[in-house]
Length: 224
Image (cartoon, rainbow, N blue to C red):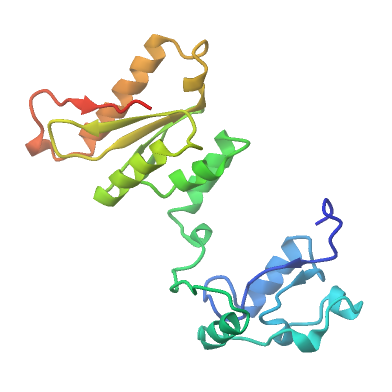
């Protein structure tokens, strides 16, 4: 806000829509802990909340803001039609950051990658995230959909340096080894790359059905 010389921040939160994060006391906590107290505007539920600084200063007309509450989406759908905004997405489970199993993945990412990209964040929901060392991790798919997702992520034009591993002679999960140093050949010698291949293939075998593994599992490693 300071960088843009803005007067306030507006969010799409709606009082009572999410039981885990959008109750009155939780909205007040966000307002306070964000450092935006008084300048955090919730246009959809402004009428149910105390007046903000922009309203008091006349920058916003409180009477033109909304007073939506609860989990019903009727008012939101009506508003989206009035504003010609669409299509309206189906309801979801909410923000992934509220999921106990997903939040630790985010903490791990920002701990080891100071400048994460959109691709880095998309990878977080593509399977098991197994940290191998401060520079590298291996993502192992849990099902067919995640196997296909890993292939799509690997093929993206904005993908970070990675290697993809697909079982060639048995049914098992695909895996993707992610390490920015792969693009810096002077930092990763052949021994380190071979170790990365071994670790990734071992993880695939570990998460496959042991009774259906061939004597010598082989893998397909697509090249870009």
